[in-house]
Image 1 (cartoon, one colour):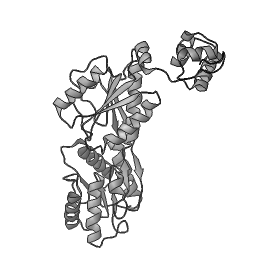
Image 2: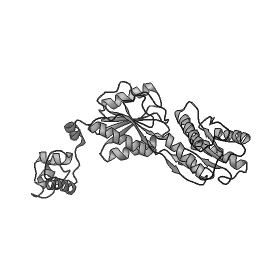
Image 3: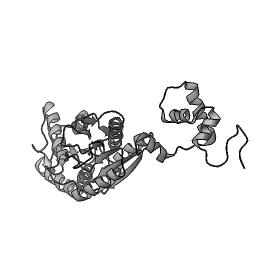
Image 4: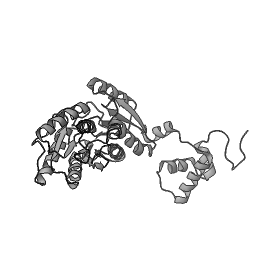
Length: 340
């Protein structure tokens, strides 16, 4: 049974049905949907109205053949746990989804051979671009053997190649926010406890924390930075060491939330009030740690979702026009809770 002339057809609508209802040619309807071609605004609107009325869904395969694009993007991560890559992925999906682009997630687990395997698969699938992220802020080598026609953007973990496009967190700004907050609340004897010194995040946050203290005419509580592990256990041990050396310490700025939670545990066990006697500030705004801490942690949020969103926008620009090489920095933000 066929539809009456001028009425919506039965079954799945075709582009020809949209064109007929809008009173235009199939070619004009196609251009209106793809955003191409020059036409009167009211003509384009008639096509869009017909699409809505018929519930028309474009054939993605046909669109790909027409445009030469697959409408897919690969996201490669070394962060198997997802602690850092998941927010980046969500931010990227928010930006890419608006353009009807799908994301293919590949976990390399930090293995170079696995990375090459995923890279070949993404290339075979003719992805329009790739976002590379990880669980650390240390620079990483660029992808090896990538097809030069496929643009790549590095998120959180920047590429060592300055001609690549990288989107990173602002560790300098994050350390400044933490120190400004502590000094503004009247703290003057601030200890800094952080992770392994060979990690760039630990070194950078420590350097900028010391610089900010020096600008205020101060130095770390014990005269030095305490490098160690990214763990609660290290936070507990470090707090003991700091309080033995500098018992008048009135604040701890910690390199991550796990360390900060360990510091808070030691202070509580010693009967030291937080924040009454000693304030504690963490880094990362990891809800699992920050909200479970007693009291809940004031911390620095790296805006990982925004890093993913900006990386996706840079990638779309590279796909549509030309790559914009360089390092793009995303500001951190201070999240104030009861620990300070």
